[in-house]
Image 1 (tube, rainbow, N blue to C red):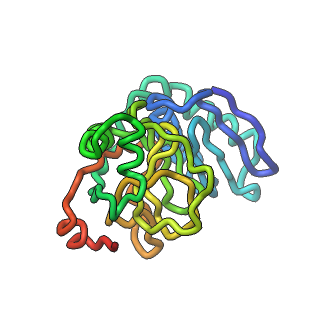
Image 2 (cartoon, one colour):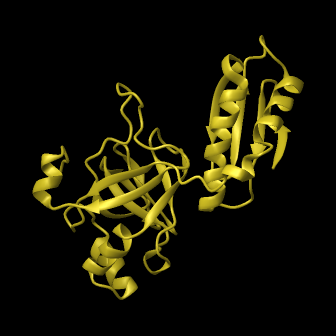
Image 3 (cartoon, rainbow, N blue to C red):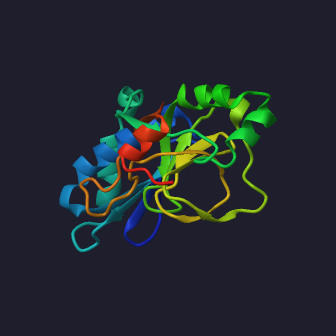
Length: 225
C-alpha cells in the first residue's frame, strides 16, 4: 500500500497494481476504514480498480494529519482483505431482441447462445470500479471463452439497461448513451437513480450475479424493449 499527495486537499491511496477480486475487496475495506477514521473531515472517497482518492476539508485538517490517520486506519487491512462484499442479484433478459451481439458472440466463441448465457450468468462478478457514467459498474471477470474486444465503431445509442461485454469485463448501461461494448441482453434494474437512497444498487467491492429471466418477467419488472 502506498499513499501519495494528489492535490491541495487530496491523497491517493494505492492498494495494488492490478484488478482482482482480492484487490477490489481491499479497496472496499479501505473505504470503510478511511471513512470512519476521517469522519466530518472527509469530503469524498472515489474508489477505483486498485486505488482510492481521498478528498478532505482543508479548513478542518491538513495533509499531515490525514496521512497519519489514513495509515493507521489501513494498517491492518490485510486482515479484512478477503471480505466478500454484498451479493447483488440482477435479472437479465438474454435474447437477440435485447442483445444485438448475442448470436454473433456465441458464434465467434463456437458456442450456442444458450451456452454463452450459461457462462455469463454462471459467473459471480466483483465490482471493480464505477465510472464513465453515474452507475456504470465495471464487473470482472467474464469467462475467457466469451471475452470480446470492443466494437471497432461504437454505437451512437445504447439503450438503458443493456448488458454488455468488453474484453473480460461486463457491465449494465445505466442510461441511454454511446457505447462500444458487445450487447447480450437487458437488465430492468435501475443502475442509477438520483431520487433513491442509495442512488446505485452496487458499490465497489460488491459481488454481482446475473439471473436469466424470460421476456414476460423482464417487462413485468419494468424493462423496456
